[in-house]
Amino acid sequence: MKDFELEDFFDREACDLCGDCLSRCPELSGKISDPVGAWSDIVAGIDSDRAARVLSGCSTCMTCSAVCHSGANPYGLILYRWFERTRSAGVPMRASLVMPLERDNAWHRVMAKLPADERRLLDSWGDLSRPELEPRALFAGCNLQIMPFMASPALLGDIPVFGREDLCCGEVYYRMGAFDKVATIAANLTETYSETGMREVVAYCQACYNVLANILPRHFGARFPFKVSYFGDVLADRVLSGELEVEGKLKGLKVTVQDPCHSKLLGAELRERQRRVLEHMGCEVVEMKHSGEMSLCCGLGQGASRFSPVDMTVGTVRRLREARATGAERLVVYCNSCDLLFSVGTQLTPFVIPVWHLNELICEALGEPVPRRNLARARSMVLALFGRGAPRVVSPRRFYVGS
Image (cartoon, rainbow, N blue to C red):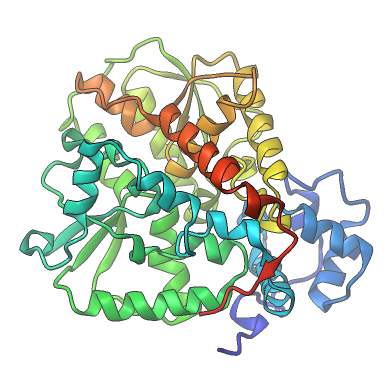
């Protein structure tokens, strides 16, 4: 196993122990009585009660690194402490259900039961030797592979799609601090992509974009023969330039926006472009109490600290309630993980607000709507997790996430 150093993820010399990362955190603000002391303990590796409250309460929303005035990357320190925990004590069996490369995980169970038209799409995406993938192709990560119906030809244009179960970018493992697994993923992807002729990979998901463009090369030694771009930027250019004729087509629709966690590390411009696209189509955007850099996680990251489905459910329901409180007609997401988690949440709570991916709205404005299968997919995920997955959910056993 590789020896990871704390300095690879957190700049201790830059950190002045101000505690702003905790005092400004939308998840922990007000819950930590002494943010400076708690942060000092985490930096020093002291196993105190106040440090434990942070490490068990973090939802991986990434605000801490977004607001750090010294650029020390406090999020990286939290992940490193979880890495130490994961390597020494392993993780509960239930965590394997949401790890995309583990045997019989929930993602693969849902994908195995996709409708025939979506199954054909997945099968067609798996061949990386296709000449049409050169020089530019769109990467369908696990979150698009579980929702292939979102790959609308009206939006993709002439960009071909590729994706396979074994090409997971490793985001979920990184978010849990399973660095050994991420290092193996980085090495495997480096080897796999070196044999292709792709020169630009367009990541459908902003999480995949950040991992492929930044995290794997910076922290895990990945070397890719292509540049990585974000499909949301490609699509925004087509909308705002008028290439896609959607201006004013959704006039009067009142929406609120969920900013996904990785968007905080990718900059305010990325988040603002999503809103400009909505406004260009005529939507009225109303903000939730927590938005932008202070946005709360959709619930997915809620499970990273204690591997608890209850924590995830609480986080999702809380966010749906906040969205509904705006008076918006729809909650708009631009992350497939948020789409799936919120759709699951609407099956578990009366605080319902319709959940739409931004790309679905663009298709609606074009007059070429995509099938609304997110709720059916959410029900499949619930069954995969709490039906067949129930024995692992309640199991007291743990396992090690190795290479």
